[in-house]
Length: 318
Length: 194
Image 1 (cartoon, each protein chain N blue to C red):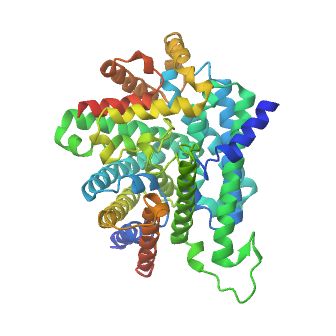
Image 2 (spheres, chains in turn brown, purple):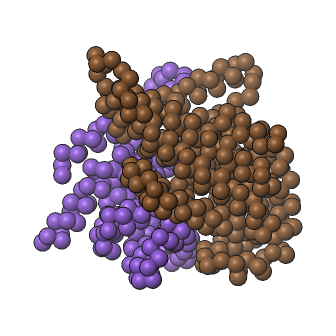
Image 3 (cartoon, each protein chain N blue to C red):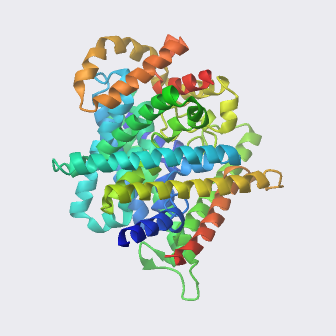
């Protein structure tokens, strides 16, 4: 039970996906026009995150390492579809206001990130609570941002008028540009805290380590939104080293030991990969990609990181 | 004629009025990350146009002839994301073999786009708005053009901002976000077009 509490605290405060890690920014900006929308989106994401974490953790010994990303995506997409149908049936108003962003939960990097960095290498109960904790942290952050935007943009909170009549709502905060301004203020605050901590000699690496421009040094190898900066490409092979090094620090002991464990597992379970699912083409694809990577890379140590290796291959060829 | 008019409206609407990044917040990560220089931004934009147009065509065909035919429309999220991921891989392999020159130009950006939420977003929007295959392709193309316009403009502004004296906390991402916010206000002006 202690473990569960620790995971909840971790998700809500220590590694809050929005305020600390800056992950999943697309939905954060798009749906926080009001506190209610933020709350709805956060809870929807939390349900998907907790359930997909639980299932991935239960299946972690069955999913071959090479096809794990497609497998995660299928599991996550299934839950998103289920949640979307439930929302359509029972809370149509929320479904309407969130619109296209519900199916897009699939590509939210928080979910795939947690699947990869926690659920795939930890037992079910902590994984479930990790999902709930991260989801609560996300919900809390979205609700806060939504509340600020609603308060400034419309003078209301959860639909109740709060501001005096003399307050003139700044409509722009409820619209698209306001989202950028609020996020800019948030990141500036993070930078400020980071600078202060740097001066005091405290740790600051985690702050803003998610989907900011710093993707080359991003600790989250699995983040699906990983992109290359032109400068990073120029640096060649060096650049990719840093994520893997950083990752072991970030994910804790659990992930540190996992690459070896997984690579041993791969060979036995490779056969079962082919017959397992309907998304064969994508799976084969990934396998081929990985094989390609391992031929060129010749570092068996890193059997774990499919995405990374393909990227490495790309770079070496250039 | 009616058809052409509708397509033109979609073309303008998706590229300028409801710009994919500045009003829908899709594809935000490459928008913020690959916009340091105008030429890389243009490269990314071209790759996005290529992939989104192709993906909306393939997703449209699959939706119409497979999902609708067998009445499993609810599987669209799962099917689309797998199809897009596979498609990008195939495009990459095909380009490497068949058109090395184009691959040189776009290759870096292709893996980044695999799960760019704009690609999936366009495919799903096409379905939700019940566009036909051709309309869907036009919508995808227009959306991607909108992305390219936005990212190239942002890159241009960022090149100018590089040498300014900026408060310490606002250096880097916050300034880019403020710029994007101002651009979003400018793009609000297009809403009178339609």
